[in-house]
Image (cartoon, rainbow, N blue to C red; front, side, top):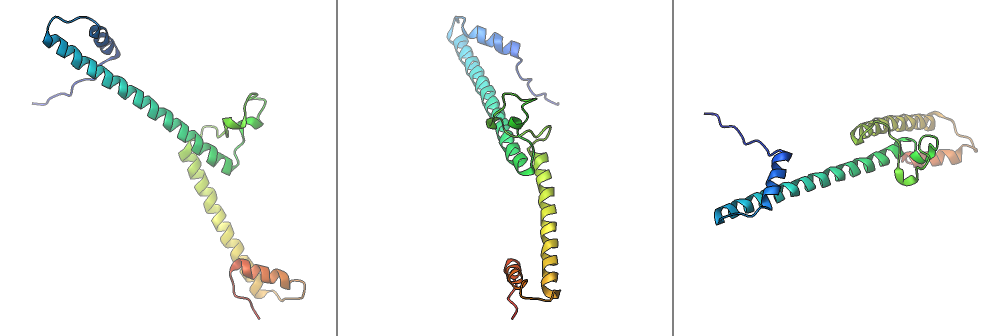
Length: 156
């Protein structure tokens, strides 16, 4: 035999329970039932409050992460667009459009990868120039600086 799970109480049922809690009971058993119902109602209220608190915390964290990533990726500030956001201040943060923290993190990862490739390309280019270019008096200072920047041993 397959047993079904009990259905959660509806708002109407919870309101009925709450109304019944304030009615006087006739005997001990009824009072015990009311106390159990009252405990259930308080637990339900606590879970609702906790769920709301966690939801607000998630929204705040997403906004903070979006502001940080949006600032790094060059998204505009709300305060800079006085036409659409006349009362915006720096506290309002960065305008990232429809992006969320995950999509901005993905965009930041792509930009970071591009930057790493460009750094590697410039490193190889500078190394080739240092190895192939004949040196004269004017370029000696730049040659030494480039060697230091690349971490190469100085040539004698």
